[in-house]
Image 1 (cartoon, rainbow, N blue to C red):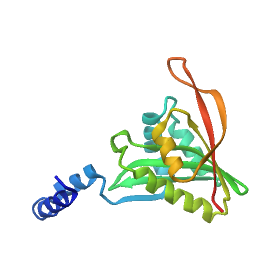
Image 2 (cartoon, rainbow, N blue to C red):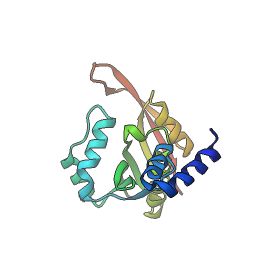
Image 3 (tube, helix red, strand yellow):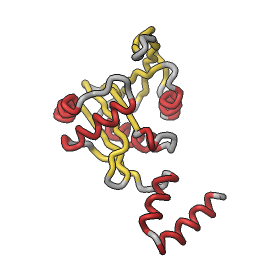
Length: 180
């Protein structure tokens, strides 16, 4: 079925069954995803998302601490009422580092992280950030494709930086992007 046929079927279905239309929009990734500043009330959900995405998830308390700091910028990605992603950066002078970015496993592969990161980069630039850094596990191809898409370049490598639960140690790549 073509995208036009799916869209037409969804529009026709929307007249009869609005909840089904919402489900279809979310399923196909066309629902209105909103990127907005995160608040202290979001800490528990952000901790859940982090735990679902990383071997050592950050706690709700750690998110509360970050959300309370003036030098930390946190955006959430919301689909309807549900928070499905976030990005956290720490700022110092005219530089910042992306500390973490995560998307709910059930919503990955729909390019929603692009909307999230695009908005986050705009806000960092608006705060006077000229250079942005991040670390990424060398074999994390989805994350690397995202960062490549946004013009990040590899500027260094940390051997055996990430430790897996099975004891395996993986390399980290240091990446940089100029925002000016």
